[in-house]
Length: 414
Image (cartoon, rainbow, N blue to C red; front, side, top):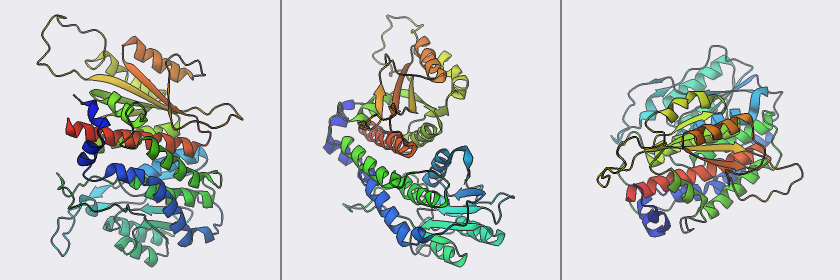
């Protein structure tokens, strides 16, 4: 069971945070600003596209693919955004120093058969050493695709970008103080990903999408994301008490549960999928994500099974002192719920919606509440009232990223 008093011990959290995940998330806003500035310096501001591409294909792995899914959610149905995950894996070669190579170095990608001169390929990598991405760039060049590459300067992928006449954009790495040698990883070839890497992948993609007309973002939308991330970092800082820190409160609520992460709309759906990935990577917890309304039929069986709350069918007077606390379902419903037109935007991040809230609900959301109530399963709803979809996405992702890290740190110390 999680000892939630650990969440109010900043010193214990700092000791547990060996890879400085909280510090990385606190610097996410700065990374967005740096990525925008470096993208303009690399030539993105001078780009004069001749029309919009037929399709935008985004290749990468980890949070680069998450960024692709978020771009697809923001672009909507008017544009075709295709995430390209790796399709194969080969044994990677060891480097000259003999260090074990990362598993991702041996991944391979393939372009769809229909990709050609009318399409744009965007490649994003935090490492820049994946030979599969280099080969993909060469394949796209042979087919006549326009190519944009985001990779660390001096990496093999950045060098390959110049060879295939791609637009090279720098990947912004995290700059964290080195207080000692890094902690040994349980799986050296499968290291944990920097939790703020998402913004180093997503920011150049969004700046590019804005330039080619893929999204209808206001001119100040991207700098506004940096401000929202900074504000979330202040609210969710380690020395903020749990009752005033929404990320700590959410982490404590999810402890000892099997979370069902439901979402209404594509933006909230992308945030829910990201939260499920972060819970697995940072907290070691399984979670199921899905979008309304189809998730109600997909997850219905969870409520009638052993994880449903309900009444205990066993002997009420049985001695349970030596028994572990049973796992129960916890539904977390994410959605974007813009306020009325003309309303002043005063919300500090996503707000928990009270059960008795009289605001408008779609039929899917109302049915989700009835399903949870019928089986005594707790449903907690978080809604962002930001009218801009990108800002609502940043709101939801920033909160849930901090919550996943806090849950993992507290569980490690329990």
